[in-house]
Image (tube, rainbow, N blue to C red; front, side, top):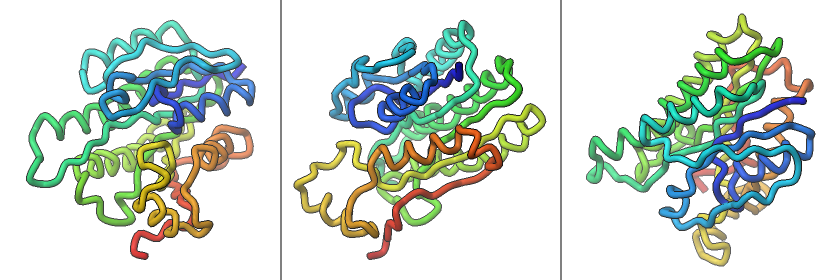
Length: 244
């Protein structure tokens, strides 16, 4: 049995929820963590536990609170995992004039600190001969994101974390890769809106990326077929043109 931790699982239509479904279908035992309070504040509905297979929902908590990161790690101590997908994110619209220490630090705590501590725990508890980790970044390295720079900066750190940790974990035979999914239709923009259609036209196929598009890549990375790939940033954006 392959055991996997997937974070960022707390709302319908999200990438994390889709990854749970796909990995369960592949026979993984899935441990899932999310923060439904954050998603509800952002206007999303809770995903519920509508999963078939060996599924364990971990205690819901907000990772912008440092003590909650440790609580999650304490809960994980009861389980052994050999795969991990860090899919959670804290992201708000925050232009330069709105920057403040609290908002900047929330982005860093959730997106960077929590990821680093989870990677540390993953290495310490791994009993299998090898392991695999996937981190999620954004497209900040490909173009401006001036309305959400705290998020972009935190995700740039995640990109570097993937490369650095891949070397640090190489002797333990743990592969680490970073995926940029590009704009993905997870319900955060109304499908009948002008903005939604404008963005659709910026893709080669004239459609938004779907959670399944990303799941196909991540499943490959965690399979034996992806065993020669580590330390990479993979842009899976369907030819998205930021300057169209």
